[in-house]
Length: 69
Image (tube, rainbow, N blue to C red; front, side, top):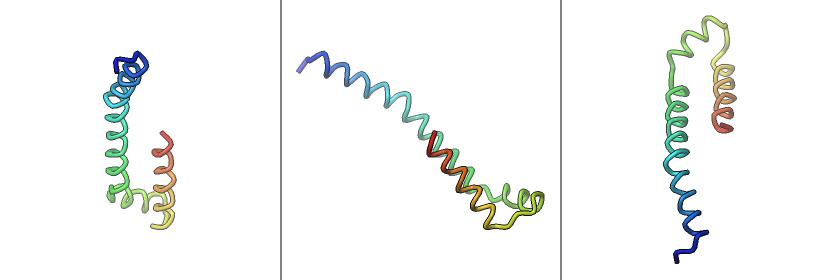
């Protein structure tokens, strides 16, 4: 099975695994840190005068941005 198409497919999978997956992992790790950062909510809530529900909505909308990237 030394088909050139199979070799090309294996190279594409290897490139994806080595280049894209680490980026996705870092993106999701930063997303987790961002979503669990309660210090930001404590400061933003008082400075912007927003409720906990409004903060949750805005964080959820930012999460959609992470999913789109």
